[in-house]
Amino acid sequence: MISEHRIGRFSLDEFRHTALGDVGSTNTECLIRARAGDPGLHWITAIRQIEGRGRRGRSWASEPGNLYASLLLIDPAPMGKLHSLPLAVAVAVHRAIQAVMPPGANPVSIKWPNDILIAGKKCCGILLEGEGLADGRHALVIGCGINVALAPDHGLYPVTSLRAEGAAVSPDELFAHLFASMGEVLNVWNRGEGVAEIIAQWRSAAGGIGQKITVNLPDRSLSGRFEGIDEDGRLMLDMGDGTVHRIAAGDVFFG
Image 1 (tube, helix red, strand yellow):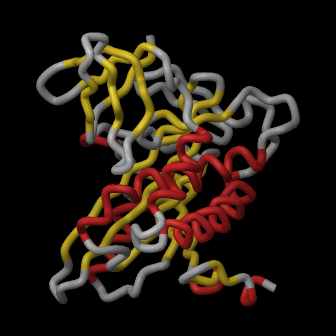
Image 2: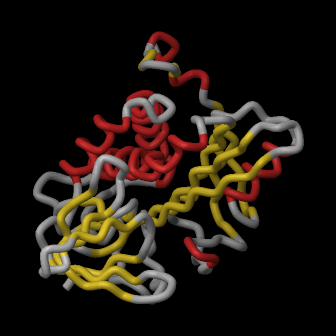
């Protein structure tokens, strides 16, 4: 029974789920509830997002057929431990997508920090947003947009959908896998105390280690060899001159 399925700090029946039709964005819906006193562990899903958004304020096309899901957490970890949460989220989403892929399908991998690729094509966008609340709590929202039936072109990377890769799954079925995997991985993460295990799982699913990459930063671009991630989850970029840059945030391009 789900109520007996306790993993670390949470059992899955502590997570709630509200399914909506059209919304501005599921992340925004979570934040509205947080401001009204929601205690967190609350999933919001929607059939369509009118104002979906990606990282750095980019728009995110969100028509019916794909999965749009956000999880509200309240005070999920001390602020100094939150830097590793995107890695944990990537592990959970990777696990959910991998679970629905048919035998012999193209490989599913993680691209730093938390993009999910199938045969090198992006199939998912993940956006984490945080906000301090009036009562002193901190709200953190994990937003996931997964291409189930449609693969909207956002212009930065090649894209694909689970359907195009042979997965006959509905958004609701995929969400059931995500619901379970996120609960499991958050308990491994354990408010940032389990970062070593999360990094090990992230590395086992990572794509492109050892390959040449370019990392676009706000003020410049750097090219080198992707050496993996360090114990804090930062990308390690071998510049080929004996130096290794450690990068906390940026857009990665292979080749």
